[in-house]
Length: 494
Ligand SMILES: Cc1cc2nc3c(=O)[nH]c(=O)nc-3n(C[C@H](O)[C@H](O)[C@H](O)COP(=O)(O)OP(=O)(O)OC[C@H]3O[C@@H](n4cnc5c(N)ncnc54)[C@H](O)[C@@H]3O)c2cc1C
Image (tube, rainbow, N blue to C red; front, side):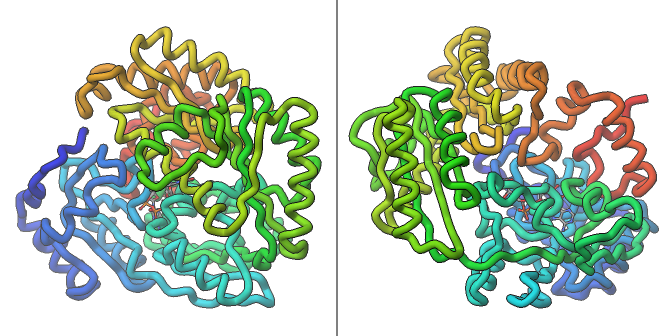
């Protein structure tokens, strides 16, 4: 389903007596603030962030409490109405967009946005699902703490969405993905029961870790209503550097050196090829290249420390970069002279997707292979794709330190957006995914499967793993009412 740029809101699905009775019951449960069927009010939330998918919904429900979510799920189960959970709608795989049937309700968790508690003593925050990531950052900062996960969509992404997609971001290298931040979880199951696993226990061997089962399940196994999250002491020193390199192999070797030299202080290591940097410089009017010369690859390196001051940290990073230059790995490097300059470096990195989008249509792939093999993968995959798909340009950028890059294939010049993706882009993606699979990697490192990659997951994932996932889904949601058609195909393989 492709989005159209100037689209009138879909009309609501035809009303039937049954649907009317269901909506009336829902309204009685949630009140006027908690429910709308107004096409204009629902419209924004029915198209995904990238504008790829547009769906329809019976209603947009916005419960205010876990008890309301539980009652709503029971009501939906009684009427056989599917539920599509949604947080900030910043997901990249169409997971929070309903299908075109208009039979599902869109369940927004955004009203449940209380931070129930935040304690410097325990280093924990208890957040409802609708807390926006940036709000959590600000609340932690006010208490002299920080939440060690951040990403470009932080102004929209919610705790529930971050948990349900097992989001990553730019600090995974040091702190891990969302899985590592969740100490406790509360969720409403398809039965309407509330699974309360909120108490954070460092040691707990009472069988399956059910919270880990729910993390990354993209709303298909339960509705996340709250989470207990780990916080760390705020950093007192941060140093951000930009290095120019001759190749991606040098970037991997530099990463290894920086890991050894900086230890736990190394928090981010992102790679930016020359083409991506040039696209951003052309797209962002005030952006400036950090280095005077053009370099085939660039590395954005960030080190932080809760105890070391910036001067000591800067000295350590200068020494490490100097040694890397002497070893011929780095051609040139600069250390941000101020917070503003550090932010400007990050804006160059964060601006890549928007800049590439401005150039024309592209197929984006969020892939991972083992960190050690990533340079060889990029060196093999870029020419393989460009040769097989004449006129395209393949670029890889992002979280090298995690073995995860965004592998974008830009359409040939003159390709029409919305046409090329369907006509040729899908075949391009299949080639990329085949290559990733052959290299032992994952077709979704960060963004999840959503509706975008359901068929590709079914085609390429281990059949036994798929069958186990289908059995888990069957056990927890036998009527397939929680986010149907996402992550798993509607009819699981035999
Ligand atoms: C500019 C930008 C940069 C980004 N960078 C990164 C990045 O570096 N790393 C990364 O991992 N992601 C990144 N993302 C993607 C996105 O921010 C994450 O996937 C985020 O976790 C989605 O949160 P959300 O609240 O917007 O979820 P939504 O988009 O609303 O939903 C995402 C999925 O989670 C489900 N869901 C949402 N809330 C709940 C809930 N309470 N219970 C059950 N299921 C739920 C939805 O059904 C859907 O399947 C980026 C997005 C943007 C816009």
